[in-house]
Amino acid sequence: MLTERYVNDRLAGMLLPPEQFRPYPAVDDRNPWESLPAFVKEKCLTAGEACLGYSWPTLPASRYMDFARNGNRTRYQDLYFARRDALARLVIAECIENRGRFLEDIVNGIWAICEESYWVIPAHLYISVRSQGDALPDVNDPVIDLFAAETSSLLAWTHYLLRPRLDAESRMLAPRIRQEITRRILDPFLGRDDFWWMGFSERKNVNNWNPWIHSNCLASLLLIEEDENRRTEGIGKSLRSLDAFLAIHHADGGCDEGPGYWGRAGASLFDCLELLYLASGGQIDLYGEPLVKEIGRYIYRAHIAGDWFVNFADGDARLGIDADVVYRFGKRIGDERMAALGASAYRKEGGSRRLSLERAIPALFNEETLAAAAAAPPHVRDVWLDGIQFMAAREREGDAAGLFLAAKGGHNNESHNHNDVGHFIVYADGRPFLIDIGVEEYTAKTFSPSRYEIWTMQSAYHNLPLVRGVQQQPGRQFRAADAVYRMTDDLAELSLDIAAAYPEEAGISAWRRTYRLHRGGEAYVEIADNFKLREATGDLVLHLVASCRPEFASAGVILLRDGRDGGIRIDYDSESFDAAGERLAVGDHRLQRVWGTELFRIRLQVKTPVSEGEWSMKIRQM
Image: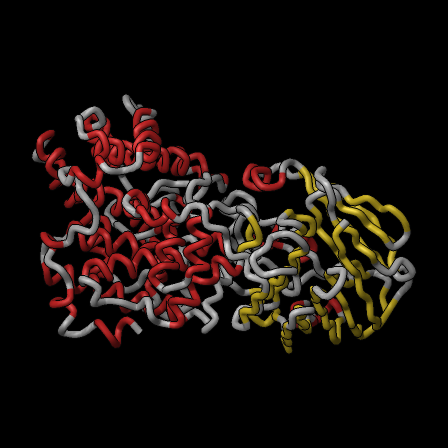
């Protein structure tokens, strides 16, 4: 798509010369900075003042070695990211105030980051072939991971915004920034095609790494690279590689990594497209492409209410979106519903946990987002993405009240996969009741052959059947089949055969699961199972994971109350099942931020051996 249009002998002529590429106001362009709203300036100055006299944390080798020694990645990363956040906050504060109060700390931050032995985090050291087998990196093998690229972008924007102030402090600062970006990022970017995230090698299933890294490499090329031929070559290469990311998408634009990763998949694609659009004076423009529009729309199609999102795959159910990015993406593709979701989140806490100048600077100067901040999110009634087999439905368009159902088919080799084919969630009035747990803090185990030893990745901790104690398995062959979706004003329905998601030893011949949201009259969710096994078994359980303690009110009735008015009632076949509940202790900090210290699993165990049957449960609001 990008390659065929723009990677040709006209590309160099499309690009603005480096001296004319002025996408946002630098420090000497005072009027835009002085004209920022008072509350914005106050917030940014407060954040910068908290970093005055900052003691830049050391990055000891022993902390880098933690990952290889014991799998811990946070002790090093916390120190690493703290440095970068502090520098970004100081830079913004100095640009706003323009009195030199923050410059000494900025200089110290630049120097500290430039002095780091390696910008690649320990969990991503596998990219460096020459470092394999060691807990520390070969510093003579600069490779590009997500955060080396982010570091490059941070320094490039710092150089762009504050160049005259840096030169006044020392004429050595700007050349040092350019030197480090060139040797660590631009040279390997231009000189190598073997990074898996580029999509040039045998591996074609790129993921969020592709646009995330490109958004930062593009910024570095456009802001730092002084050789016009290298600059054009690098941008052409980025365009070709971004095509690999676009190629993995179905026409529906669905993100199988979930909305948490959309923020660095679809949203990072927008970062790339926006840089290219600005750097070419609008000549490189993909915003009219149907696929680009659908990739953008995914984020509001996965939205439930408030900061709750459908979190299939790795990701948190509670998500702070980058409001300005979502708003600007929506405006570029002419989708007011997407823009409304971004605007509605504008003044709320959230967004990226780390501060990115590439996103923070345009957000500061986007007066439209602030003006539209009272907008209501779209709350789309019906969603069906046939490529990733994702369905969502609510009772009414534009209204978070009432029941919300989401379900998925797909396969068990999705990016950031959980073994969850046939899984579903139910919310009521925008509050979670039957849930997707999400993912714990990442460790070495998360992306290793032992990934599916982690409980949150297993089908037994999703809203799914467990037959003969056999769970779903990872792999593309473990998938849903024969997906059928239909929707009317009174009904939204998805039907799947999930038998193939289980291995042979489960003994499943067929298992058709149907998900319905009945909207006519009294609304209710219905989950219906029609199955056939090769042999009868009494070892068959339907699992439901709940955000609150279940009450077994009477035979066939389970109540879920979250401590507020209302809740949901689950009616099940008490002649076929015995119901029981168990507490799931939540010790992981990431999960605790969403769910607190406990969750619950409901077990519906068959009373007598069965080889086939039809069951349904109905879920209503109380």
